[in-house]
Image (cartoon, rainbow, N blue to C red):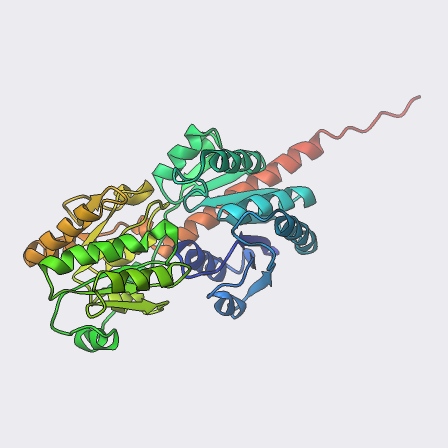
Length: 401
């Protein structure tokens, strides 16, 4: 019987985000006959307790691994990762996110892990950063890329950026979508009026919503400002924002400043997203950058038309005018206009919702795991072949007569 191969996944923080939820699903659903899962995370996050209780998954936490660049903490995290990987002896290290991706691959290289894989859920460098900071981050990614056997990108857009920057050749990066459980979402049933009342919304009025961590990347203040423009034309519409984070106080202040307190609900972190989606007439996402917005998939699978920003891989799942609309990041006026158009034409909105349900299997989370397993197997087979070739080149010196 073949001994399962240890695969160690490393991610910076287990918050309620697409990359984190997909990583948890992956480690919990890898075939236990072939793979033994370990999960290493950094600073405390909302999903830590869930990770600790995953059956068959060894969980480790390194609190010094944090998102901001902090040289002393980063060095401590690198040393801790190195010691842990030396103890675990994984055959594969699979990293996620920028900080964990760089530190994790450096530590894996230092202890001689034979296979390193990195998932690109969007890059850590963006056009919104200071040019010097962006250059440093790209340089670090280039160093880590040289240690990496295989990349998985959640979007073709991210894959193209990696190729253009010289991080990898086309044959070193596969596109593996950030999946959702399509069947479970489509089968979700909810008492919509009751759910709306639970959220503090009028059960007989239209609702526009967004689901996102309240951090700069997601631009939640743009959602509030869009809501204000919609509210001016349609005071009957309610708004719900599910999420929490560093910008919560700023969001609350902007809601108050724009006179939206009676129509706007800040729901905090939620685990009932599929049920909330069923209450929405339009889903909105105001992100400034993304790899592939997983929440778009959740909205579309729920039959809700989407109005969102044209970021990275968004256009690979969103068909403008077919299952929703895309506008440029930061264009609050266009977001509001598109939302008002869908609210004014419910038949068009319903048709877009139906179109959104027909997502292909590549966006299913179970297929995402199977694709990763196939990639692992190919990498392991290549490693075995290289080892065999290396052994075949060992010569015995003939004895002298």
